[in-house]
Picture: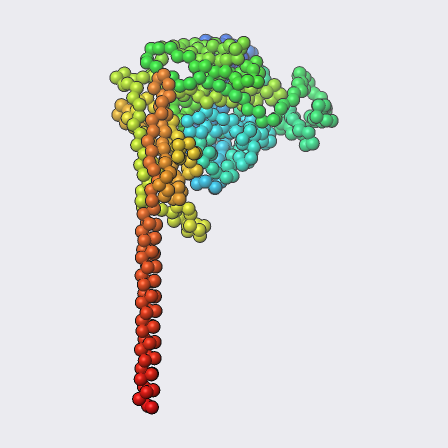
Length: 539
């Protein structure tokens, strides 16, 4: 719940806009600095909220507006393979805007890309980058605190993050590979009133880093790995507080969030999604949350979190003893069809910063009326004989790029869209070529269709013994089944033709040489005979 103040235009023509007085999150008020002294908000954000003004004076003459908003994410969306923008906004100020660019990136392997983010009207100090591979969950890559980066395992090399300016930060991918094809999310977080403020931190054998408001009078000392201290110079009444010292393990250990498998249901039924933390992790150290995403690349919506009272059809059922956090949806509707993500949110007591670790996601499809579950038909198409080497690469580098052949797999006439596509060469050998699969299946009437492309070298394709198989895994309510099709490599007809021509040329050349030898011998013998006859006539 929010309260705003709107004053009429002044005599000088100054058009006043509404000013935010403060907000109420559950029973916790948060007031803008200008209104802290005499204004207060009471009540509960899920019921009603009252604005109380003490010692009213003439300057308080205005119109007052109450507003309610449910905002967890505000995003700048990109639907392509590489870019996506997210604002992490759980328990933060409202009316926040964040911008990410470029919107679309298409890049070949071996190149580098840079994605940038900017906070338009905030200056949140905790900055994050997340990655969502096609058909996968949302993974934390890195975070920036006071300009200092911290990387998750697997992203500590080749993915530098930099705070370019106060509100501006970026992610670079130095050597783009096939595994980097994904949706990328940037996020910003801040602590709210009532949470502890980060003063600063230090690493062994390095200078301390301070938050801006503490850099002048506060000093952190570090004697060894286990001991340190905080010194406050020129103490003032505003320094009255409880001070906490904390240690953080930056070993890069990634939280494991396990989720149950996909679900396909008829409308009106009840479904339960299981979620639990992996071995070695306890819910007592994390806040569990549930989100949903309509389709890959769409907005990520917040549903509920641990310790929050569930209302309506969505009910979280935390079980701390069992280290699980299931989500129940009753009376499912068609628009409940989404991928549901469970996340573990670790709140650091030393800073209030909060990174979220997501599970792989559970896909739910609520069946439409008159639509039956139908497995896909799969067809693999051979490469075009006209496909050849990349002429642009040849002009750019001066070298002829290895010739590639593209094998296309099409799966169609299936419902619902619970499919995964993989490729094999020779029944198990993983493909060395590049696989490119549509991010989502496209609707075609009552059914779906999806395609995937496998690029292999010409040497691989022009081997009749090689077998290229496209495997489409389809979930048919009870289990995953595989439907596949394959093609085999072929003889290089162009090369075969060339070899025949060269062989014919060699034979012809050999015959000509032999004939020439015979002709030369004949001419030599004739000349010798003529010379012998001429000698006899002279005698």
